[in-house]
Image (tube, rainbow, N blue to C red; front, side):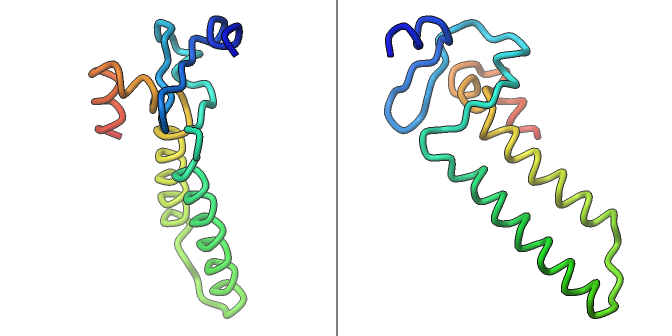
Length: 104
């Protein structure tokens, strides 16, 4: 584990990981979910429920604006990007990254 921590710069401290290496674009956007990835899993469940409701409306003959579906999908992707990538860990250490994740 020590070798992995030295190479990746990831340090687990309790329920949330804290990166030790300096941030760069590849580290910020790398997939690094928390030890218990609650938000990415919840987004997947929400997307499945939305798709099921969308299909039910479509089978019933009702129309649903594609823009609403795209906006919902973009919102879920934003939540996953902020909680499942390096932005979540670096946001706990760097104020600028924290403010970026707060703004999104």
